[in-house]
Length: 631
Image 1 (cartoon, rainbow, N blue to C red):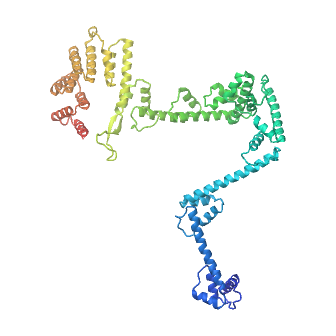
Image 2 (image 1 turned 45 degrees about the vertical axis):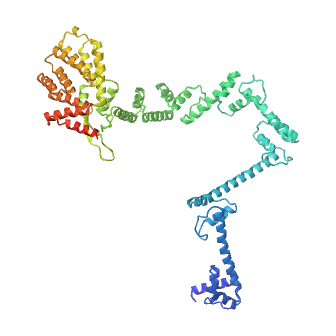
């Protein structure tokens, strides 16, 4: 017989024993009874023919087993439905045979706490109501447990403080509150003490009295210890008692406690408390800053002052460093160096500049990397301030950084530095009136570094320099130079102020008169007072007919007035006297650029293009800008 046949025989025998059918003689696995018992064991409903067969062989009791199982099967489903309804989980549609929910709801219903994984399963399956109920039940169970623990504790306190004859065991009873106070040696009020006497809890009252005696003795000792013996009040309700307890417990006193001691004249007590506080702080600082072999524990020690400076991230002078070095506190010095350097780095990151003392310290202690970081941050800030972030070089060694530092300190630039600014170009987005970032990439244009805010700063510094030179030397050529620079710094009012009270009759040199009047006329032109500008220009021509500068000014004034043919005449006269034609074009370009009336701008542009479309091709871009602005 093979192994499978043997197993089937054993299984059949076991089923016959389980279902009390051992009297049936046929033990062959091919018997219909084997099939029936297997179906019953698996909870599978029998057919009518199978039930009839059992009755014929007087085995109908097996049908009852099957019916009981079916009934249990149905009952399980009914119970599951009721639990789902009870705990608001009806939307969970999974069969009870395969769902985790049945066992979870069963635990909730029986008052057992859920595990964290079971609560997580409820959350993941969107069964928030069931989870809420489970959490509430858990909370109730925890509260009940806490109450049981408190009751047990109350019983223990009653035994400990000789109050077992008091029958009331409610937690809100007066006795419970009293016993909790006794446990932490807290004073009882007169009403609480009298309550003990009135309820014949004399032993409990005596324990309280003993506690008070111990405290009174302790109070007396503390007064002596902390030099407060002149305070005659021995009552434990005195404010002095908790203050002295605080001192003895090595706690720092509050401001209100110190004020009370001062009012009572306890200066010695305050001094002791403060010295103890400083000693504790000194001990903590010694541990923090690795001071392991220094014997002086007094807060009057110079080391205490040094460590406090260190803790506040203050700079330690050479005297303090030598003090540490002589005592071989090398680890403390290393901690200071790291802490101070880290603090400087944080200051730099937050936008604070280094001072000379800090820079010198970083150099001496080999922290040049922090100096470089500071310079890079400073360079970036200056580039932002002067609107040249487009300049790509971020190195602190860049010539631009040197130049911007000079401008920031209002120092004059060297001619070579100014020439470098004129030669160096950056790319910046070209502004357009109808540009939207989502439509297309911006177009870029090149511009010199010596433009915008750098241009203004440079000429402001130069203007101030020549003003000071005039005050120092009384040389009026310095006034002419200062006036010219104020105009370029976009401050024509400053230029006019310099020449407001000049007495030209007292100036002997005609060339100087012409230069001053030309500069003054240019300033009037800048503020659109063209008649005054013309008067200055014509006087300048009278004083110096061979200078091209006043002729150039007259040409520009005429173009401002849209008198183009007159302007051309004056520009030609200027060129005859040595003016560069490009300077004429620059003046015309300025007229076009600064025109406020779009129609007038178009008019001058059309005039220029008609006259020489190649020479004035640049004007087309302004014509396009004008068109764009109108859209």
